[in-house]
Image (cartoon, rainbow, N blue to C red):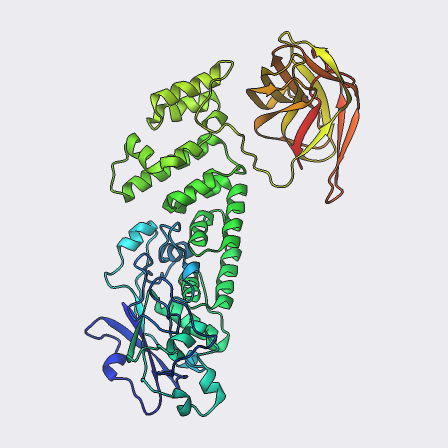
Length: 558
């Protein structure tokens, strides 16, 4: 489908056949803009409004324009009569934002209009509804001829002489540098018909209304195609309105879809907001229908994050769902081998060591996606000490933002603290809600050594283990502390008693002395104070108490 814009003066009338709604060449109706602004050939110009070419569809360095402009990677889709998600999926190039972004081709097309355009625009073209199928399926359903806008103009040399007022002479030039270069540049085309590919009629109308009446006319069905058009014609003010509309309508169930579009349109601020939303609502975002429609690069960008708030086994399940959809898009059978093939490097971003052995055994180990040697290596990682090296990341994800904090409860370090299988434990409470992510522990007095350790946080009243990790750490023989982290942050509520517990296996270590019962951390930026109170934990604690022992540091976020 193509839409045309007919720009004419009273002495120049558009052909009735071009104004008809149903031409034999399947053209849609003209957009009738009377009292047109400055159109036609002009002498060569070296003015500031000349626009560089991009993607083979912009005015040249001297203001020229390629009428066969267009990028085959970006075909615009018909307008949706339904929900916002349908419209978003119709966006040109939505399946692969890793290609050249639309933002890089701003100023790559041209068009023309007048200051009175908004009130005279009509269009009888019908648009088909877009289903909620994947973006790839939408792209596949497009007609072989891309949607475009045609601009008809009368070639007039010295068009300025035909315009009696400043308003008429500047109607186009002040609207868009692309328009100005296209019609007023030294290499402006002499053709009476100019085709503008990849432009939806409704989006073009929204652009013209904004340029010549400051009217912002965008909605869920048109926002993405309008953003695309605004970028192509270098109208940043309209771009900003579109992006602001998307920000206000950002939700967990469309965050992945908008992230794909933000990457495509080179909108880093919108992309950052989408990622923050995914961090906060990871489970809901992964469950949304649009998740399986994202491209591989977007999937990897999310899996790389340390701030996702979901268990790793659910991330694996979501990645498998995406792989099944991608295999279908590539017309492959959804076998385990093909799922691994389409996941590619994304599989290595799943942090299998963060799962429990039960989660791993019930899911990934039986999926067929992992190689036998990988399954064996991970089972050994879960069950033996010292733990063998695995090919997957074992760094915990922390679904918290802000700056990491820590407190130290001892003021002096001494030597020789022994271990015989008994846990070191200390009871504590805080004055405000925090999230504990790990402990700092003392290491060997005998030089560089590896320790095996189990860390836990236990709710004192119910004796419930709220978080734990079987892991290890290496020390260098100094009196420094060494970080040991939980797999997930552990929420600590104010005025509730908890027990910090560590069970070490290794040689004698340093230990802390001259302990403090109350330790306060003050945030430098805000002055917010977090107060820890330490108490003796009843039972066998391997000697650790408020005054002496292990567990010198608590690492947390507020």
